[in-house]
Each structure stands twice: as structure tokens, then as C-alpha cells.
Amino acid sequence: MSSHPRPDTLAEVEAAVWAELAAAAAGAHPWRHAVLATVDGEHADARLVVLREVDPKSRRIVFYSDARAAKVRQIAERPRGTLVMWSDAHGWQLRCRVELATDTGGLSATSRWMRIRLTRAARDYVALHAPGTPIEEPAGAAAAASGREHFAVVHAQVRALDWLEINDRLQRRAIFDDEGPRWVQP
Image (cartoon, rainbow, N blue to C red; front, top):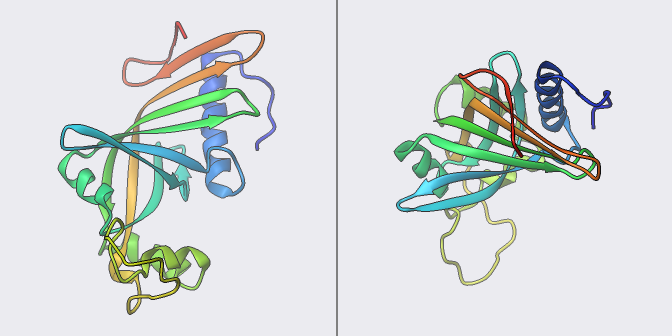
């Protein structure tokens, strides 16, 4: 986790949030595994995703998916979602309202696949069956030809940050969106 003084101003809070997000994408951090909520028909659908890249300047977060996963279809149908993260060490909850887009065949996906194809992460995309497909029993290492055809990059453009700090002394909440940064009642 990043070590920085406790943020007091809205500008310090926003900078600290983006620093923590960048640290999460870089390695071991409580925010590395975030819950992504999307909509499936009339119901919310939530699952963990692994933050792979964060660009504070463009306010973009990147994670990967199996292109056959329900979330990819959900994103195509309704390209909005919410990422939720919690850090016990900070006592911080973060909700990111995002616009989502997937890339399965472009340069973005191809270049990232080339970086991970020989790593442990690649095995998430080489399964013979799509996620959620009924199977007789867990099979282990049965794999498709290359996995590249099942690899998708998901770009999450952050439209709003909703930060909540909860500790023994106080509770604070701030929102950062098109209306501007502001403190709100927790």
C-alpha cells in the first residue's frame, strides 16, 4: 500500500485515491481485487475482477475477461457499471461509477495478450468451455488452442468516484464527478 499522510482536503483525497488505485494495479493491495457490478436483464450481477492497469490522467482502469463471460455480453448491452473496493488498513471504501468497453480483437487486446500469454494469468482464458458452462467435474488443465481468441480487455472510464472513510474517530465521504468535488454526509 502507498504510504502517504492522511488526506484532509478534497484535492488530497482525490490524489490519494488515484495513488491507491495505481498501487492496486501494480501489485499486492486490497483494491487489486474489485467487485464489478453490471446489469443482467432486470438483475444486478457482481463478480471480482483484477485491476491490471490504472491511468489517473485519463481516469481509466483496465481489467481482463474471458470474452465468453456473461459480463462481456452485459457490457455490450448496457456499458455502465460500478467497481467497489475496500481497504481495511485505510478504512476506505471506494465506489467507481464507470462506462465500460471491451476489446477482443484490436491492438489493445493483442498487445496485452502478448504480455501475459506465457504467464499464469493466461490460463484464465484458455479453457475449452465458456465460464458458467455446466461440466461433469472439474477437469484441471484442459485447454483450447491458444486462448487468445477468448481474451478480452475491459476498459473502465471512471465517471464518478464515491470515497468513504470509516474509522473509530470519524466518518467522511466525498464525491468526485462532473458536478465537481464535494463533501457529502456519509
